[in-house]
Image (cartoon, rainbow, N blue to C red; front, side, top):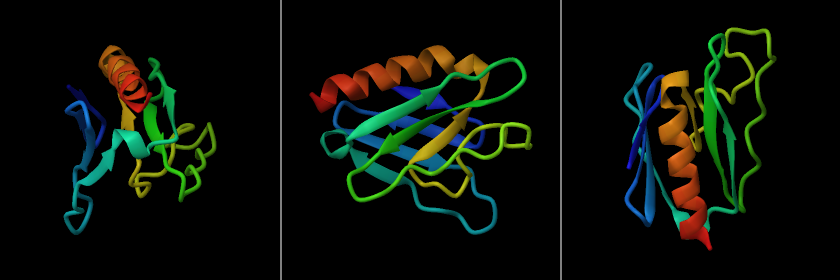
Length: 107
């Protein structure tokens, strides 16, 4: 299962979540998370005006704060947050399915 984000992708194979971001500067390594290690998820669907986001919460880290709603990033976590990815409106259905599959794998 894969979700195409604004600057990257999120894939889920039933146990592992892989967040691969399109590089800005040096190529970042993909972030791999085990579904059983995730304590929660945050999902904000994209709209016609603003992109949404998918964010995964872990016990050892605080969730990245959303940027100001009227900024260019429009109410999403920053690109540098390794556990989140901005998504366009066309990816809302795929993101909702991915979040549901991750939540099911967590329990």
